[in-house]
Length: 471
Image 1: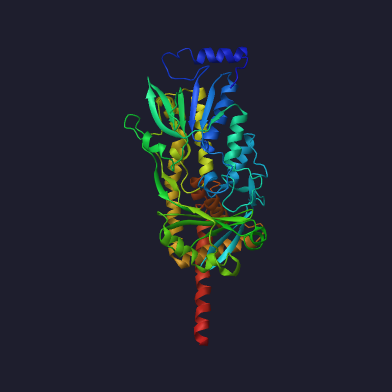
Image 2 (image 1 turned 180 degrees about the horizontal axis):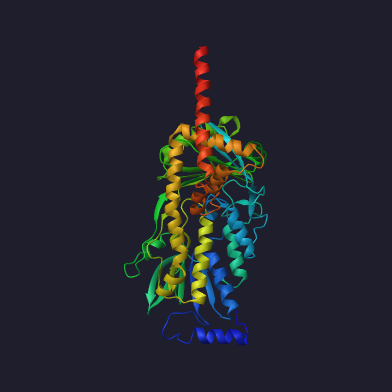
């Protein structure tokens, strides 16, 4: 950042805030900050840090270490993500002045289609608005057309550079300490000392292994293996078979927690989450009639590319220390959903702490850790919710009841859509899991569910008896 003239109020603020600078860890004019990783967490952190520093007249410099340009089609431009920005995050970003242009949003999602072995139901967005954004994190998959696609990560990185961050196109290969200050080493042998380092490398980066340190009390997050693949279908086929809906599958397949097919331009992204997804689980999923029915001729095409990224399912231990903080996937993430939203929240909390409180371990514990703890507590509730979801997957009579209740809500205009709203937010990650759970405590919810369980399975039994009597 270039120095800016300070107002009298800013000078007074800085004088009072940094009067004990020699005795405490805090940023000052001329401080250098290094950010490892230029994905959403790193870009958000740099963006907010610079904007907040400007608000108090503080002159700092920020380097973002990111070797990728996010401009290649295929693995070189990939960032291992299904690429959905939840409606709540779209709104939050808009309040920050961060709007997603048409070149970033590949398709607006206005509905979900829930597929089960007992039928399917179409779930409209609660407010009839296309606010969920299907995006590419990079510049598209293999075989995609070389058009001017602005990937989501590239868009955020560009925003951070516009406010003054510098992108260092080098691969970080090492991390050390020099007289109490963090030092970043790169593949070309260079080593740079910083006053503060934010680690936003993600759980698929090898640099996290070097940062596991008893001295800092940091332990990297627990992870599971997921599966992401891309199908090249063409715009016309996407419009006819998938439309502007995300297709979610609630199927009785062991170890499968969540499965979705997301339309994006000429492509559809398949995302599978569960207990260490492997080839057997993938084959079982793709062989189901419910999945095949989403493709022309009931034939699942060969994906043009796929990967098995690790995802954060358990928070890192102590993701902060003196002069260093871990944000995004490398620290605390929301379970299974809204990883980009988690990156936004933790990055902003870390930046706010660094500017307005300090950069010591104690400062991050007071200013940054509460946001992480909120996510951790919410993830405990998420495990309960996904446990119920797993139970529904296993028991067909539950699936019938849930499907019938949702379908009736969607058909009846003006009806309070209790089940629909719960499913919508579970699928999108648009609301905290605590809020989703509390919604099921509405006195009408269990009554309606019980009624639909009885009626849905009674009708099924009657139909079955009629068919048997005709034989």
